[in-house]
Structures are given as C-alpha cells and as structure tokens.
Image (cartoon, one colour):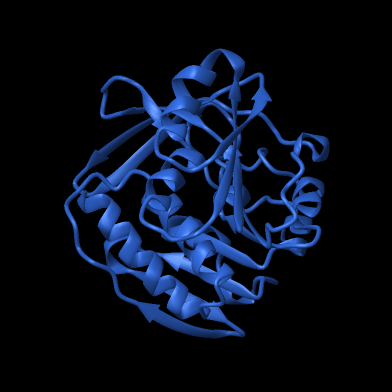
Length: 254
C-alpha cells in the first residue's frame, strides 16, 4: 500500500475559472489507471474543503482531509509550450504532529510539497519512519513567497536524509546543478514530452516519452505517484519510470 501527503491548491489556468490542483488531485487522476491500494492525505483551508477535497474523493481513491488554515493558490499560463506560474497564496506548513497516523501496510509514501515550506526535514523524518519516501523536488527549490514563482537552491540539506527517491522537473534539476551528486539513492528527472532520466548509483538511464498536445497540468504529480506505485510492487527504478511515463500519457490523452 502507498500513501501521498500534500497540500491541495486552487489553480487559475490561462485566466479560466479556478479548478482543483495539487498532488492529491492529480495523483487521484493517475491512480484510476493503476492497480494499487493507496490513500491520499490532502490539506487545505477548512473553507475550501468542499470545493477541493470532494473532487479528489470523486476520482475513487480514499482521501483523508487534514485540517488547514491556508489554501495554496497559483496562476498558471502556457505559451508556446512554456509555462509561467505565480503564487497568490502559500499553503500550510506540515509540522510533525500534523502527520496523520499512516496505516501499517504503507511501505512507500509520496511527499508532495508545492513550495519549500510545506514539509520541513523533521516532518519528512516522521513520515519516513518504517517506510520509504519519494519527495517531489519542488520542496527543495520553490521559494514560498507570493508573486512570480522563484526558484533557488537554498534548501535545508537535512530534508534529504530520509528520502529514498527524489523526483525533479528539468527546471528544478537545473537549479540544483549536478543532480547525480545529491545524497539520494534514486533520482528521476522528468523532461516533459522528452521523457525522463533515472539516476541510480551514479548511472543515468534515459526513458523516452509519448509526445502529446494535451494540457500537461498535473503530469509531474501523476508521474510521481505512478513511479511510487511501481516501486512499491518491486519494479526496478528504470522499469518504474517506463510505467509512469505510460500512465501519464494515458491520463493526458483521456
């Protein structure tokens, strides 16, 4: 069994009406295509619970609401295949005591921050007790400030001490530099329509992807949960990346 912990968000995409976002929502989209037992622990302000948590529940994966006081809010636009993103509001920071009791059968957990302040090192240590953790690299480089999204490498190195897998997007990997030198056993860098690169013990393996023209919002979250699911079933890192790539293509094509 796998678990995901993360903040939900309110997303304004290309000036349209707000829609649910954040890893719990997009992971639930992907999990409809996976044969794995999973539970999602999703957080937002109480006033947004109905608007954001119910759509996740409607996708079929069990979701547990974690009470919060702030809802992450983003404005996203796409132009010529490039994405720009601004932050209207930062979501809650998870303290160790905010972590719900995870079921005994959970052996892998996907920790899915939206910005660097979401999951400090001591909270990840609590989640990692007795299980393996995949961390989304947004939690290393995204500055938790309102305005145009800023990226830098000023993260707490202790965040990585309990992480088995680090998933990075291209722009995040660029900020961090030599990703193969990071103290994490497995690193996956996603390249959008160009696939992904898996780093294990310093060796890099390229995994191709399927070129699609659909809205790519949520593709990274879908990849991460699909990768976590495959690894929880004993699939190799490269095999897990291949499966995750297929799941993302299927989800975006729907």
